[in-house]
Amino acid sequence: MENSDAQVSISAIEELPGPLVVVLNEDGCIEQINSSLNTLLEYQPHELMGENWFALCLPPEGRAADEAMFRQMLTGRASSATSRVSRIQSRSGRQYNFVWHIEPIFNKDQRTDTILTSLYTTGQLSMDHETLLQSLAQKQAVLDNAVEAIISIDTNGLITDVNKATEKIFGYASEELLGENIRRLMPKSDRSRHDGYIKRFLETGEKRIIGTVREVTGLTKTGSEVLCELRVTEINVNGKLSFTGVIRDITNIRAAEVKLRNETAELMLTRERLAHMDRLHIATEMSTGLAHELSQPLSAIAMYTQASKQQLESDAPDTQLLLDTLSRIDAQAQRAGNIIRGLHGLINKHTTERRPVDINALITSTVELAKTGHNMRQIDIACSLSSARSTISVVYSQIQQVLLNLINNARDALIDSKTVDKRIVIGSSADAINLTVTVSDNGDGVSSHRARKIFEPFYSTKDPHQGMGMGLAISRSLIGLHGGVLELNPQYTSGAEFFFTLPINPPTGD
Image (cartoon, rainbow, N blue to C red; front, side, top):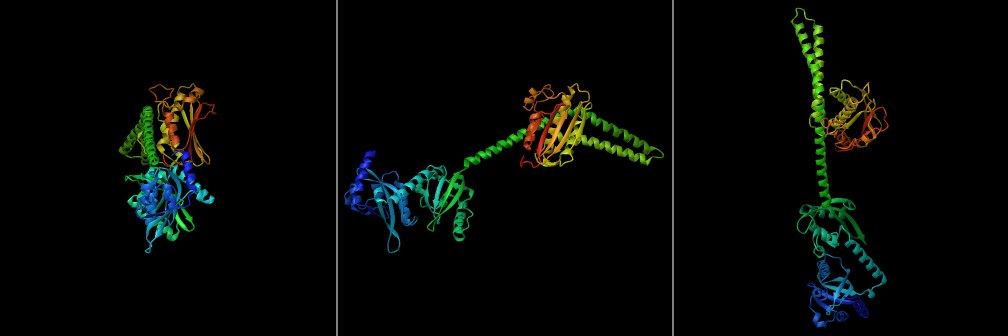
């Protein structure tokens, strides 16, 4: 309909004596209609009596919602009187906007079997009433454009209002929900609990569900479940309670979170595999030195065993000498065992479970293991450990791996250096926030060009057969998983110094 026609129509009906009144029976058929409305609709009185009001006098769009409100009123599932902005359509097809006021008419048994409806034009309303309706219309427009479903219910759990997003999320048209119990949108397992929530609230005033955000499961028209976030607000107007729920569909959000967790777990597994490969590479580098280190205690054990045997076979064995010799055998066996255990701990696969570890003790045992490596005999390795707190929750094997990588890198730098007294110093210190471990050498240092790339994966200055170029990249990743950092100290000028920090209060998780 063109705007000019609408203006003419409005002008014509403003002069009608109002209001326009129609009485409908329980089937929605016209029982009585006043002359003003009869004239506006362009019908003779006998042509309207007994006809269905909704089918004959309302345009198709919006008809279902108007009829749903009528049914709520008829069954007592709506308030005793209500109003809404609606349209009627004349015989010639002209449409008019009206404020439709609906009231039940009770019979002697207090049943509603007829409905009185009054239609008002904006000119027949007071200014305050018109302003209120405009405000309500604006609010409804906001609600209908919200991405969250917004559903209002009364104290019986009956739905009194829904917005457009409700239709999108749950798949029902608004007229299918109005007057229905909110339980329709819940899985069977949740329905009885919901009735209990409302009952408990009305009896005790307990507001456990009011204002809090909860995750709930909704049920769509097709029977599929949808994960939602729900916030319920209580509304009290003149002592009449109602509840409004704002519902956000978080199904896709939770699915994305699960996908991210799975991808993170896969990334963690890949990191651990790379770390294990790096540990195997370190063990391979140390194999020659390990063979030499093991041969020494084994040779000593054989020698001391022969000496003990000779004492026992003599006519007058020296008991004290025998005891001393056995003690030496025990010490050498312990030394060999420690070397084997250190190697086994290095190359074996590990869980990423954290436990309290004395970092100073870890440094000491790692240095002993590093000394068995190839070309370590011409390099002095010393420790400068703090007496401050050194116990922290870490994955032992991962921190040991980082430390061995840094020590081996320092060794390689010193082997290629012309420095005479080659020396590596491992230090520890702590403050209120972090525990710091340093590995420094007195070699030639790291050039600024190498310093920019040194932590990049596959970057290496070594022969390709001597390294993967992944040691520092993996080490930085392992320290990062502990909430710390691994860096090259740019202020150190007597060679090269790497340091890593570990937070005193580490982050939870791995």
